[in-house]
Image (cartoon, rainbow, N blue to C red; front, top):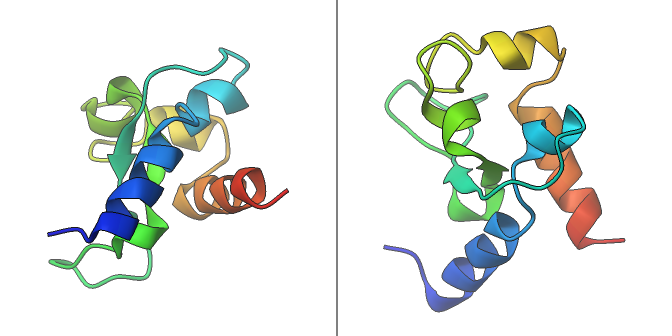
Length: 93
């Protein structure tokens, strides 16, 4: 269960819109939150402070999504840590 401050932070991150859509020049699209798995154990997920915003397609799609084959991410040569760095930069200008 997320704390109040974690929930507020996650709402702020979601308002940024999908990282990959913006990286590809499509503009801000509604975002879901993804807990990066990079650097985590198989059954573990990152803390709520480390979420990244992704649209449904770039999050869950079997081919392009982070929970799929990640084809769109690989074609763009970016990953979860690139998205996390982008979030940090956007929220701390």
